[in-house]
Structure formats: C-alpha cells, structure tokens
Image (cartoon, rainbow, N blue to C red; front, side, top):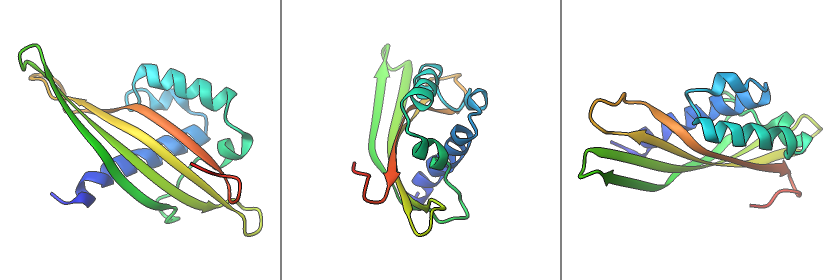
Length: 143
C-alpha cells in the first residue's frame, strides 16, 4: 500500500462533494456524507459562505487544481469488548484554481474526516463525518 493508494479515494470523494455543493444538489450527498454533517454543511453553505466560495467550491479532476492532498490523522477504536470497530481518517486538501476574473486565483482548503464501521456484518462503506471548506481569492485567503 502506498500513500497514493490511501489518498486517492478521499480526493475523488472531495471532487464529487465539491461539485454537488456548487450545484446545490444536497440530496445527492446522502449516503456519502453523514446525516448530521450534511445538515450542518448545507446550513453553512447556504447561510455563511460568501458568494465567491459558493461559486468556486467545485474542484475539477482535469484542472489539476488540487495542489496537496494528505492524510493527517488515523484513529482506530474498539468498543463493546472489540465487537464494534471503527476507523477515522482525517484528510487535508489544498487547491488553487482560476476564478475566471482575469488572472485572479481562488484558493481553498478542505478538511474532511472519512469514517468506517469495521464491525462484523457491517457493509464496507466509508462515510464523510466532517467536511469543512475555507476559501477566498488570492490575497484574501488565510488558513
């Protein structure tokens, strides 16, 4: 297993989530994002995000916009005497893209947590339990 094999699936999921957020297709995020995080994310996107973030949140695979994608934490947990096993992977993604306004660039950071229940009999599905986005035009963005 290489670092690329670990980071590629979460990065692909971020492409999908950001595209659906840009299109405001929140119902299509069900199953990929946990219900509680989807409610929080939708409320934040609709009421707190500036227009520049709403309009530029979608990342493209083809645009080579992702400049850095890295797993930053891995947590394993067993409860109920080991009958329930969980894994969380925190991922940070930085991207820069053209904002379509001359040569201005839009920079953004995504912090996401991918979680999986490894308990016996559970489906092998990952779900996003945390998805935070920050972004702005060059010169206006800080982490």
